[in-house]
Image (cartoon, helix red, strand yellow):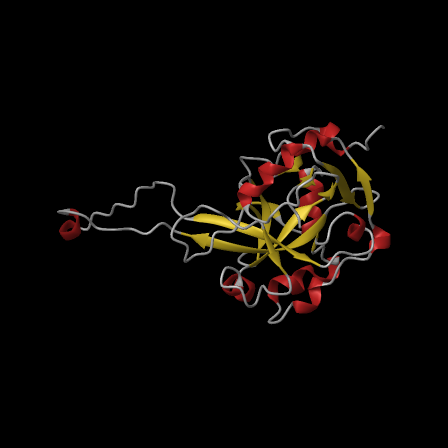
Length: 251
């Protein structure tokens, strides 16, 4: 699975890499050394591939009763079948920029983690050894993602029902969320975990956004182009976000 990742590349380099500009120029991107579920993070959607927007990590289907329990990962093998992902796979795909992602190796007494937003906090039990997976030069890449727009139900109450007043208990408007697609691991990541994020070949990123059937994009990325190294267990705390997290353990 993919439960944390990094994106600390310079904003200008990121914009050049994806030929897209940050939508809110008044709020420049901050380097992220421990991007975690529940946070608003940069994505590029099929709705506007020229913009880098911030969506919340943890997909909430448009038909959900509430906005809790967002799904942080979607299995590539079943995204066209599962009700939570089927509609998004057909028409709401996105690129999730990153320059590395973390995986945890189970140790004795460690607990394998699930794939819901809230489960990420269980990484802090200290029972697993974190590793960072990235290119040797830390260059940015895109993970395959799906996105959704959820809106709270609006209900008319009392005299407002006749006067057009609406009450929905929220002033926040639509919630836009995303999930990262995972697949079988390549030989490198298989030593760490039984799933890995779908890292897209650069030449297939637009295909993932626009193709009628982009299933061919979902193969594991070649292992010989990536490296994996152990990092400090400080990354277990989603509230910790600092450059030291990406340094090799013992360096």
